[in-house]
Image (cartoon, rainbow, N blue to C red; front, top):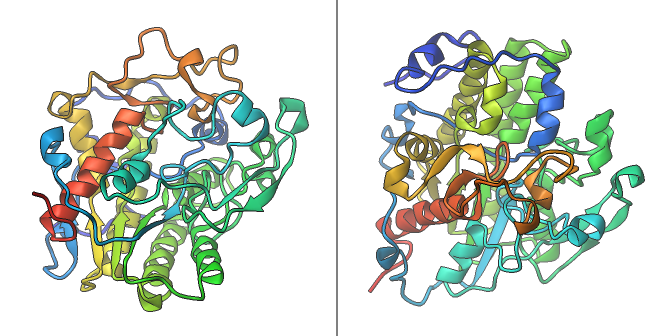
Length: 403
């Protein structure tokens, strides 16, 4: 069994993990924060998973391979009545689809279109539930970039609370104006997951319904934030790992106390996918990649420990599955796992983000079976793979039935 990773494990183990794939040659040349600005992520993770996925019979954890569509679609009428989602950009249903962002045909962190379907949308569709819509919309960006302030508006009929840039507890997430510098120009709301959960409770009589299917996917922005602080010399690895561990503990505690403790019976929790395989990773040297990977594994392991022995939790190993997609793309129907489907040049995409990516600014060689839309976010096809992983996991654990 692999031991939990800590601050002392930075790159040593990761160098060996690079065997079987091309070693990164490009070294970090600029501010890590500048690279992270273009990311705007909310969740991604790694290769060799800890045996946390096997160390407990009580928590359900799944690493499922790609399944053909004919199997995926065979779902009977769902017993779930509502989908409630918390997290970051990987689950964001359109928080920032306002003003200039909307005018550019954007709004979600993928390749946008009139029928964009991220993984939560696909799950809702397959279960016969209402499609997810953002519980809050708004933006507080820099008018010089055309990102004029759009005051937050709450939508009580919507139960997707995920917001791009959101962290677990801290309200100052990636793209929030309080981060200062160029990052602040985005003006993302970044309501943290803890507050997202509380906002749902405030709007729904301080409880979840037994028929709710709740999804939680968060943590990557906490890692990005700590990386930026380290690059700026504002913190050290030991302190950063403590912060990451605390974030995982806080997320597990919120799931147990404020979701399950408030009535939810079915909570799907996805860990952070593999950040080190993303196009963004090509900007890092091996040591930095090792640091990223260690932080992701630390968060994922700590989150697992905090949720084990809870029969209401389906813990899904998105970390292992994303690496499997990267190393065996053909099995998942992927044709490109290294390039971005979106043209991120300033001339085509002034944010350098999939948030404003659509058919009008795709890369010349892009197809719909690319893995990544931008430097960290999946394409709609990548989202369909997440949905398949979740759906198959739910089926295998008896949470949904097929014909």
